[in-house]
Length: 185
Image 1 (cartoon, rainbow, N blue to C red):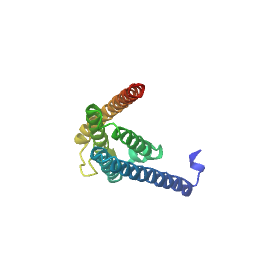
Image 2: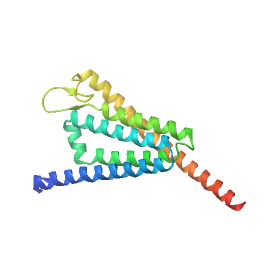
Image 3: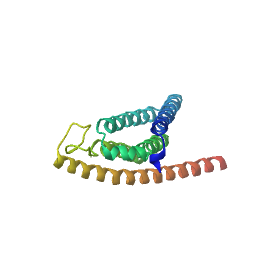
Image 4: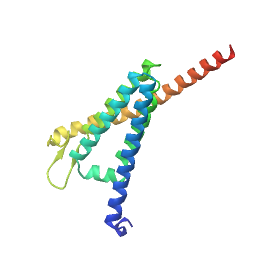
């Protein structure tokens, strides 16, 4: 079915998705940085900048280590959706970092696991063995180790995502209760 679609249309749609993702992330980052400057929050600004650096490193790893696995995942929009979810969660967590040291730690581990996931995800092509770490390491044994690291990082990343969202919810509920009790006085 997909073979009947012209290649130009598929290329256009993929490029459109990349452009939309970049606009959303750059626009959101600009808004977040401006808001953190208005709030005089260096921690918020640092989280957003660290998030942008992490997205850049993950994208660089994706491009430099391209193989069949990444090509298939790209057409399934996995890196795009994951990047947007990663950015939105970090953008949301940045609001709570100054209020909760636990969210700050969880967010840091969330970022680290995101990077580990992409940097150590091995890939391969039609010819030769597997490769990883920006395409610099061409060794099947190390690629299997990288696959293990990447798999563990993925599971940990999901766990940190869930823990972070729960902690942000608790902090938001606590803030609402505090504001309500202050309003009653």
